[in-house]
Image (cartoon, rainbow, N blue to C red; front, top):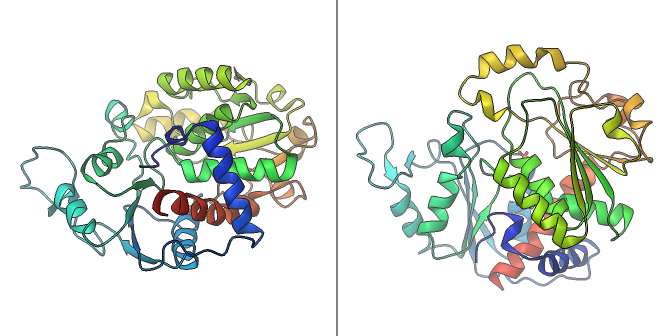
Length: 331
Ligand code: CP
């Protein structure tokens, strides 16, 4: 079984994973189900939290992490089926995966969007190539379109702080000097819909999420007793919410044209930032962000350093959730 999006599990299984993560966190589960096993962690892109929490989690479960960085500490990789490999790619993903699975019990993959070709990247081609070739579980450690481990650590953090009942949750776009991938907002919104939260998504016009993902959100939300609404008003978006989740993302209409987008998004600077005035409109909301975050660009120091900021707890919960996930997939 793979964990490519939170959709890999239904609500009751996601609840059980959070329950298991809480037992790792409070120290009541000290089992070592990965004893004698290795897990490959394949990083096409940089990471602090994901890499450290996976490596520590695998160690704490009794296993061994094998970290590979294609194009750096391992060969450059081609993922396209039938490619004529006369360019700069040395090894095909097919051999890479088939060799690795002779050594390891699971493969974690981080492969960001390149922000070049929306129609291709929205299908998560590199992650899906891993899933296609692997006979061992593949874990998404952030792909072009999803970051499910982050989203589940975020759901766990909301539950720890505010309880299990549904909450009013704002996902707000924020200005950033350059376009960023949509994986975090997609997965946060999807998981929040699966957990039945009332979700408000705020962004400037032109920053709409993927149409298919929006349909998925609405379907899950309907099933789970929640709601989804969208707004372009960055002030009233904060009214009465209990959670503020900030993230910047790029416009799907400007994929492959970063310079034009950077010029056009300049008007949103200073307006689309999470600050004390906006937080005062909320119902004493938690402030959340997946990190890394640009201070006084995405969020003011006053908000991120406030007692309602749980950004470090979210990062800690990555460790506990991933231990629960590895235990579920490999026990
Ligand atoms: N939030 C997150 O995935 O952080 P890293 O990019 O540092 O792993």
